[in-house]
Length: 392
Image 1 (cartoon, rainbow, N blue to C red):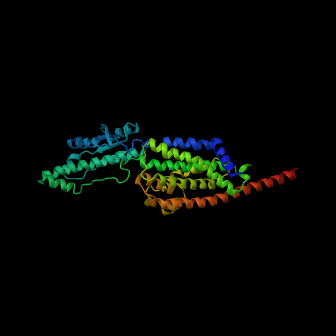
Image 2: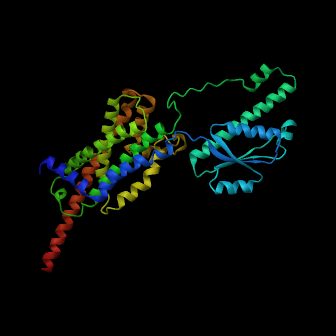
Image 3: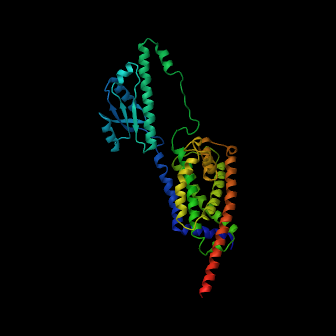
């Protein structure tokens, strides 16, 4: 059978199969819209919190004004008890609370330690983080002002008091991701993971539904079938990758600071390694539902061990070593270097060669796996024919 005809038949089966078509097109488009939604506003601001002022002094009111002035927080209401504040949060009218204890002003004037209680709704990580950062910053700022008043009242000169409270002036200038937003940092890598997972699912469903049936996939050599299937998957995902790196990058205003040529070379090696992994992965199953279930379970672990969501220093070393066998992991790190750091080709060559090495390994595993499946099917058919003859 001609090679191009094999490629055509694989593409035809990928498109005609409803489960695969839904994964390829529906899944890719759905996640392109779903994943960026939580990050469209870049950073969480003006999060509503409840104030419980048990001191009701001029100093506690000053602290409340400092908190309300923070760009991350907006005071929604002032209540008289923590119980009322909890009910307010449970009704989703606010996402956090600040408790100013009784005797707040008195203890500060006497030089005693004061504990401010903060709370936030941890169901929403970004909101909780914004509330915690805003409250801590406001509390520290208010504490410095109280200390400044104390120093001035004790006879310290104003300039000397300022220097003692702020001995170092911090001028923080972000080198990468200068807008400090979540969208340009998280979305490119997550979209690449979606490409990785949907390609493996599509290839897994296609193979799992074929290994125990007669068809063109049983009539060619394992090498021919693996090569044709990889080319078919590359043809399909060239368009889907262009949609992500083209339209989605433009729609969400994501930047590419590196070279487009470097991006193309990285993505080609990534798709090649993932397609080979997909064919090898498909040889593990004979039930069409299992590839999707397995890959849905491992999606989040892959995201965390990649190192950009969770620090690699906090991940066990064996997990990091195992993750390097997943094509999405080096590809995600390379993509972040291109989109965020403006990396040149020399800094990507190691990741690029790693992807080519993974392609070679998975290509060999795919040939072994397809050959095994074809051999098992021939054995099954041979035994079936013997049983039919003996019955006849």
